[in-house]
Length: 477
Ligand code: MSP
Image (cartoon, rainbow, N blue to C red):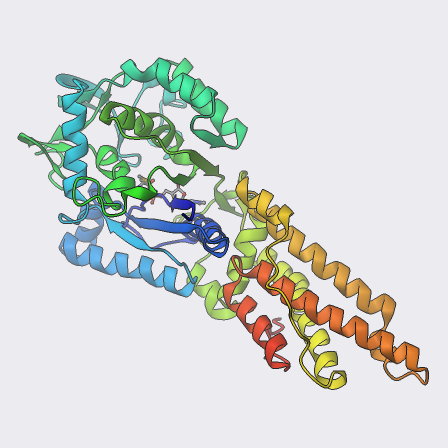
């Protein structure tokens, strides 16, 4: 039986248009999903939107729309981004979907209750609207939420609580023993430090009058489920948990998240699963954030680089290339149009594009028939190892090293001039080199498939049909 591979993006807040950060997370998952499919694994790739946020209500009001209509529009924009970016997701889950998502979220709540882990209490805390979460004093920096630079509001209300404290020891064991592998190590340590700092029980619901937009607590409609309880469940409700379990064979899977939501994924979610007696995810990859000009991308700072604009001008695979190779998977990376253009010209126009054109030009002119491609080469083992460690940038680096090596072969062996030699041996040698280069091109195309699927197809077709492809990456000023 084929190995199962299940990968998830965070589900995004649809209170604004998708930006480069969303594109990055989703592209990383897409590369891995495509690679596992090519390796013959039974693969399932989930993404979606986290819709029960007060921010949606606010944004809808600002646009004079009702939330449902507003959400339809934003979700359509996310789906357009995925279409343009060639994202091969299998399912797009929406937490407002009462058929797909709600039954499992309710089942999850009921299981927490059955384990004796939910109790009612009075809550007084500091609530950050940006995080949609209560923050502890310890988490504040200069009295402000470090993610949103805002002073949280003091709120006192009746809530249901989850006995997170009960799971502290168990979570510590699970994380330190790599039962859940958290990458990179710095994030694993950060998760362990959350536990060492002490885990208090957490509020898992809010009064309906404060939060009406959400899933009612089973048996007590005066309370609404806290957004993170609702949201985290998506990773299994989408597979049929609480309904038909149709795709539950894919669980447990792997989560890809930004470093901003580590606590929820490394602490809350595993504790909920332990309480509900459901297997734990095997891996959590935590990537850095994309900045622009050294600062967080934001509308107010005016430094947003819009993925649609980049793709309209440079094409899908140019953006896929940039995100996969030039963005560091674990550290914060800066995205500016200057850097993008530099990489585009150096590595796509002059690098890959030029190499493909030169090789196929020689092949078409000097070889009478297409080069026979005997075997569908598998990706190089080093690519495999890097992808398994989520080192997407290193995996693709290897492909460019190969291109560089092959380019050097053209320069040293000079098949373009030897082919015109008077000596038959030199002409034969030139033919051998050109054939080798064409086979290399095909092998490179195969390695490129998870990263740049369209380009990969175009190169394969050029080789098999023995013709020069269209200009893959037009030069831009
Ligand atoms: N809805 C929650 C997640 C719930 S998951 C059960 C949420 N949504 S979000 O819209 O704010 O998306 C957060 C995620 O989007 C980050 O964890 C990250 O994966 C991605 N990114 C958002 N901004 C980003 C950057 N500037 N750079 C890279 N990724 C970023 O939190």
